[in-house]
Image (cartoon, rainbow, N blue to C red; front, side, top):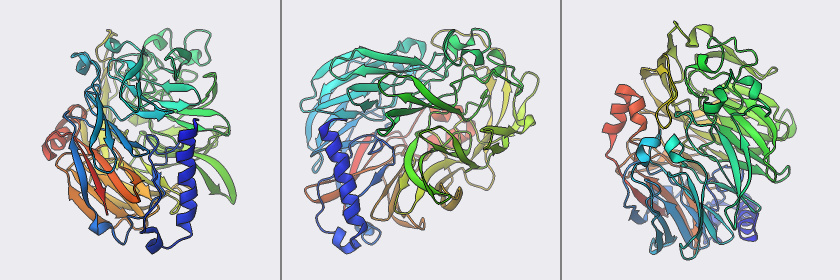
Length: 565
């Protein structure tokens, strides 16, 4: 980790200590400049801000500081980052643009416009999104829909190098920011719906040259190959298209990996749940890697022989939790399969697993054996349609990030309550087209709602409060030392909640559905809250009539809004 990033993170930690011991009134005074250094604000992806100038007592007075039209419609999912007095934000479609802005005024410092091929849409399963950029030691790093990774000079926007990570015409686009650890830029890519073969790879920050690559659909001679039927690993999915986490103590990088390909599991396993050794590692799994070499240290497969597209990529949130009277180096994951997992991040041992949304495919999780106890009738296979499977393939939680507040001890989860029926069909691999082999009509989950922002106690493994939404696929969360949790919904409502009670303290409509989580920073002694809006267009196509409701809720958009007290 470079000195600039270390300083930002250390400053946040010091300031958190100051805030915890002062009154809210004291914190409302001018605050030290505090950036948002990376996608989740820290290597643990907590999305927690130590700032409290904006707090539960004064958030009702929060107002717009500035806005920026991003010049790109549809699936704008970037979390802006702030380093010093500069904000960096990317747009959809490639990204079409990367902006450097004055973080206090929104004035543009520079704009980068990469040359992205016009045909990327047909190879991007789940929309033309970019979830942001990564900063390290004067450089910005951005993954692109054309399968390239680019480094920019952070002060000028000049392109320093571009490296081809993967061939996008096989259906492998890059939509999420990479992770920088020491002198390496680490990234995954998409393609689980196109039969790509997953891997994680690291590149030299200065040259863009490949340092290591580890396949997560392992071939002959690689650990885990025996878990794949025949040569199905060649098009096995298990891609890492979201973001990673890092623990400096053990020098471990953590990443989640996607569903196996194809969705019809008989191609790669038994197809009936009696999978034995054919569990399809490292799909639907969390994997720990040595940051220097890429060697796999441990893995946890949440959904063996996944037959429901329970994509295992969701972010891993790291925190030290007090469990059973002992401090535990924990990792938390709200998985697509409907279970909230807590693991020991140093050993990979499963500590607890409980349902956080209505979940029918499994009765419960056998923690001792680290295996789900499946409900047999809910597993689809040849000649057997599974009815009433919950959650739906968008999962109990999708990519939209959760957050963890060390002050409340709670995790804030943007959850979904949607179910489906599922039947399989024959499928043949063809490069660059969907490799699925399944039909999945969608219907609303029980209870009269389809989304919920949940405050979840990861130690007690229970919901503390929830704010229900009529639609699923709502935005990620941000939580702060000011006692607040922020999120947006598919109607375009951006809200501040009391982090302890869930009461809505402030709300404004921003005109388009909101997917990403907000970020918070301080410049010139003033705290700001930043959010990007612009609803998805591709995901609704997977959801039938519910998808039509999503697209009808708001028009497409593309804008950055920044608020202050």
